[in-house]
Image (cartoon, rainbow, N blue to C red; front, side):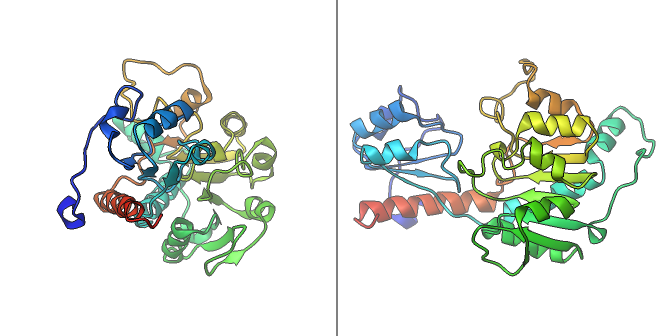
Length: 299
């Protein structure tokens, strides 16, 4: 890919740290992954060695203090990649949650091959509420049409063909709620204790958006009370420092994340919905293209 773009990038497997910012010296642009937490001091250090543009190979930029970056003259750019990786994974999580996959697989691993106490449910019989209908949300809707579900949606800026309703109506009538909205101050804890209580009894939540869209403590309470049938989470509030790490020899503290994972109707995967060969290639290509555009004077 580099020869096609006519560039010779400096590449490191390490995340950006104060100790290796020197690798960026002489380069106006750097490309980072979403696992790299770039705080104010790191932005200042990068700017000090000449960095003016940070391209993050992710759709979101919550791991970078964008406002501070702009205040010191550093531009932050995100990338676009195929929504199919996350959309496919989202539907897979729906099916797994509705068919009690966590409990079934755990029991089978212990050679307990009895049927689950509760039968699974079929998407064609259910109402699915899609929160956020950008590229990923729209791709999820396209896939759900093939299952015959009733599909409703909510977005502050409706942009795709769907039956749009208010957010309160969506959570009240949906059997499955799937989250694809950006994380902003307005959407932080979008599903809090009050809204979780308003959800349809026996509903399922799928989150492949951002962890803090859901209040972990409130979610745990709703599950333990039996109000929700289950959840499937690829992103979790407090995942930083846990996801992408080998924690087999490092037991998690008694946090909502650890307690959630103990429940038989909770499926957690480590922020991996995007992780396909196609999506990764898209992200790298788009990031390089954005860096070159900036270098050529067209930020």
